[in-house]
Image (cartoon, rainbow, N blue to C red):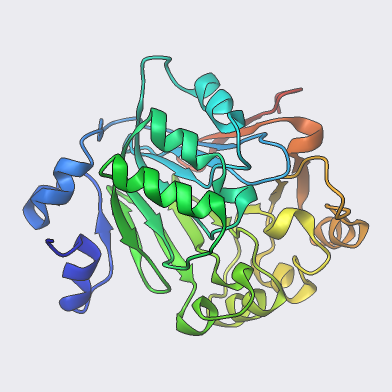
Length: 298
């Protein structure tokens, strides 16, 4: 089996996955797997999908590359949400990323992989002996989807856009808490910074606050607004302007009053998929942004 592009670059002491025209120079086999590169989109589109109690984010980068991060709980909620954002005849997604192997994040990816052609499947390498994970990986093999493990220090480049992998490193990948192994992604595109924090808790947040300082414009709020996440230290470091909570009916009390209070005190505008529906942000060059939800436009 040929080495993955990530392995190729790591062997040369670099860490980047290039998507786009330049890719053919470096890895023809991966270019063949990512055949859906369409180029030239000018704007960045981010959608935080209303999939109930779970996470799913879909983005179309200015380069035209399409990325799905997680797929929500089992069922067709993600498929329905995606159908509203793309042409009915469009059955291709360049990159699908699994942040960590828990059912409320990966259950819906099973149907996505069955119905869409996928250029590459990205994951942190953390396994889980649950039916949803076993079925997801079985479908990925059956559909011949290229899988690539990513971790702290890796990055995805496509044109001027960059998705940096901030976590997990080896210690968090081996943690007893599956949430610690979450693939944390920082998107820098169209003049803005967006942090996809999956289900990280306070320990990963502490690492991020200390090792990766810098504010972000948009935060995918960690762990559906759990009281064990969105700590003061973390929010003081990232200072989001907009915080999106992906949440549905649940018995955990998500999002908690404590977390909502901390987000408000940090100056973030908070949107929630349980109240607002799918949240879509369209950005052009960091200067013009339009937010639409299932209920209103801003």
